[in-house]
Image 1 (cartoon, rainbow, N blue to C red):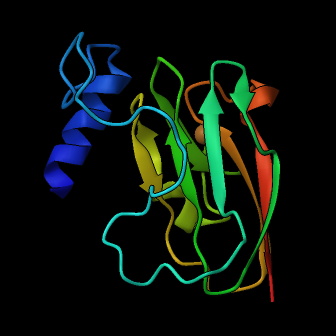
Image 2 (cartoon, rainbow, N blue to C red):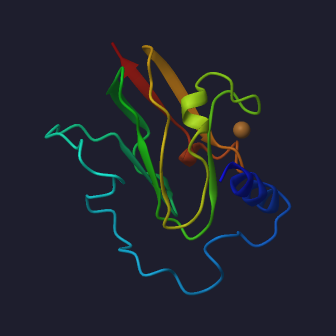
Length: 143
Ligand SMILES: [Cu+2]
């Protein structure tokens, strides 16, 4: 699994076609992000917090998000091109490794961050477009 991800990233970096999804026709998945995104199921309690960021053609829909220690965020790519969701600072990505678990994200893909275990502020950016402010934001992890 890890190997495949690395291969995908490498391919993406060289500017070739993204792997996995195949060209052209999208898989038969619901393309809107209306709920039910979390994989696995079971532990989706009734919390009303939205730990969710959606990437669209015009940037991220949420540029400031506050969650709690012990939670994680979900990022959905609703854009038509791939992105690489990374922790600040660019290019080291060292502040919040939890965000780097999202990393390379293909169109129509949804990925989860790691579990945030300490209170802190985590800036993020698109590593492929590090100076594009519309793809930058901040996740605040509150105690
Ligand atoms: Cu970067």
